[in-house]
Each structure stands twice: as structure tokens, then as C-alpha cells.
Image (cartoon, rainbow, N blue to C red; front, side):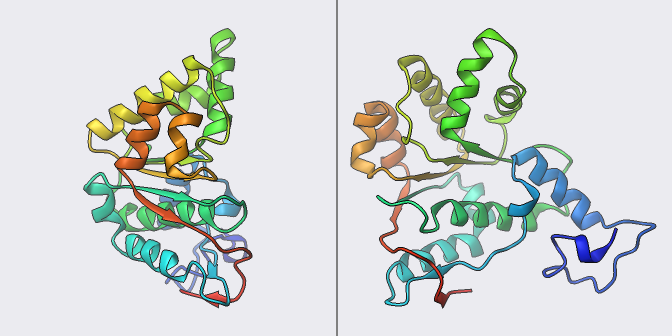
Amino acid sequence: MNENNCWLRDECKQLHCNDANGCMIKYKLDYLFDEAGIPVNKRSKQSLFADADGTDKVEFQKLATIQNNIVDFVNKGNNVYIYSVQAGNGKTSWAIRLLQAYFKKIWLTSKLECRALFINVPSFLLALKANINEPNEYYKHINENVLNCDLVIWDDIGNKVGTEFEISHLLSIIDTRMNMGKSNIYTSNILPEQLGSLLDIRLGSRIANASDCIQFKGGDKRYLDLE
């Protein structure tokens, strides 16, 4: 393995890579990320910034606290709903950051199995519909692992109005995960109080009332590094 091509290069504590033996850290992390559905270009830690005027600084610090205690967060089956009325201010990036933190805590003792999933909800609902007529591999993978994995990111939930069948399926999965004490991270452009009207009153209530709701109000995240 060429360390110059390794996405872990800037974070890895090993000073040299061994082409003959490979890297167990990267091997196991890549397996976990593959199972989660995170592409290679989203696996390395990226800087996340609040606005220069301090907007979202408190919210970023709340998420940083979750990140620092991510194993406890997951083990307790906690949930967080990260939302903003506008796009592009770090919701999905923070969700992935939390998943990265979890993998980096558990990789050493983890078996080679699906421990977390990143699910873009609009894409998942399309795959659910496609699977009715022809087996869909994306849907199959999620369906086989979504109830048992430790953590699920539900990205862009509520951003697509689903059919009664789709919403009922989504409700069943999320409700079952919560009843099992499984952890969930949601991102959305929808206010928590509007989820019921856009999804389903039961699903909206389940998500909003069982989650720590964190709202981003800022815009471009380029200035104040909170790392």
C-alpha cells in the first residue's frame, strides 16, 4: 500500500506503511465504511467550521461533545436530529463525522460485519419502490442490516414526500430500531414540528420527541475551526 494514496495518511499514527503486510487499521476501517455505504472521498476527517460571527458555534460544540463520547451515545441508543432550513451548512458532514468517530473507536475489536449505515432517505425510498419489480442490491443490503447495526444515519429525511407504503415502511424500521434501543442520526431541511405533516404524524413525532434536536442557522463554514 502506498501511504501517499491512503486516505488515513494524515491521521494514522504509523509512520510507515508496509507493502508486504498491508495495514490492518485501514483494512478494517475500509470494510466498515464499505458496509456503511460511505465512499472513499468521505472517509478522511475534514475540518468543520462555524461562521465567523459565532453562528452555530454552540451547536458545533454540542456535536463535538457527542463525537467525543460517541461510543456511549451509541450504546445508550441515543438519537440526534440535525436540521436547517437551508442546505450546505454542515448537517451531513457532521453526521458522517460522528460515524467516522464511532468506527475509529470500535475498529480494533469489531468483527467484519455491518456496524453502521448511511442511508440517503430519498434514494432509499426509490430503491424500495424499484425492489417491488426487480431485486435491488442497495435495498437488499440495507434491509439485511438496518435493524441490527449499531448506528444509522438517515440523511435528508422528510425532503421527499413518500407514498403511504413508503412512509409506513420507514416508520416500521425506525420504530423497531428505537424499540430495540438502537441509535439514529437524522439530517433534514425540515423543522421538527413540520415532520408530522410531511412524513406521518406518528413518524414525525417519534423522531422529534426521541431526539436531541440541533438547528444550524449559519451559512458557509470556512472561518472558525472548532477542532
